[in-house]
Image (cartoon, rainbow, N blue to C red; front, side):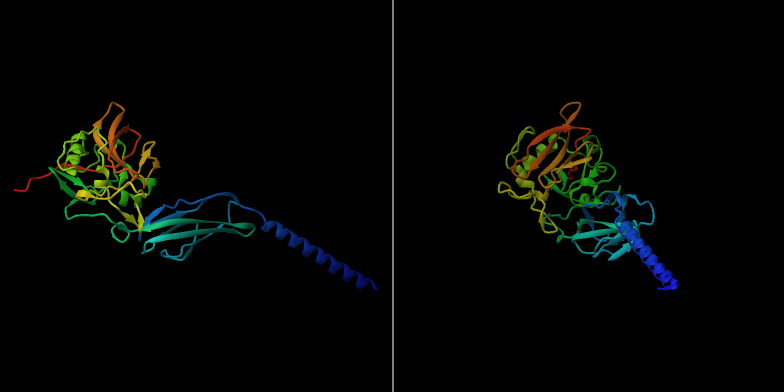
Length: 328
């Protein structure tokens, strides 16, 4: 074999070795894994058509050249690029899934999916079973409307207060506040009702019990046997029962009081418990310097007993009340 042929063969062999080495390097590079925990805050529930901001964070390596692609079928766009995006919720109610894929030229792709429930509190098809009635009060502080019923000599809100000047919605999710109202500490609840209305005290609660029971005098410190079922409503949210099922509970919804289980909160309304199982409502009266009374309904009992809790940290619902104006 001539010298030139040997040189050509050697050059070809060297090129093959280099090509193989480069391929190995590429394979190693693409098998690198991203570091960090992908975090995206997505509310458990959102309202039809609302703006939804999504911000994907948490990837610590690599630090640059990351590409974010969202798959948001059913929302205002089916897909969109960017780690911080704003899209509109679907115009229809239901369960929806959003996914984000994070890619990089040299790292394996990382992805995660999230679920949310789209609701429409203004539609009886979405928030069903409640009886609104024809008496309406408009809170001038925020323009929210509340239906109310005249029960004896008192006007009662027939929905829980949802004033954003205090308290928090369940799971810090505003959409749930539109259905369940907000949870307030007693310290906030005592001044949360709009002008002309008040947080009901023990005497107001006793007046309600008397009307529910057929004008029977009932003390506050009583478990109010059977009265919880009298004011509870068999409500649904996207066709799912709001109250957890129990054969012990019947739903009469007298006076359209619309009792639903908004749950409660601890830790200054930051830890949320028992939605679907408990409805809890503050009284304006204190038990002692650190505690105040509230009434509650448990899904597995038709009663409407009372309890007490820390005024500064426990969160319960608020039903506003006022003296009714006699019809002349």
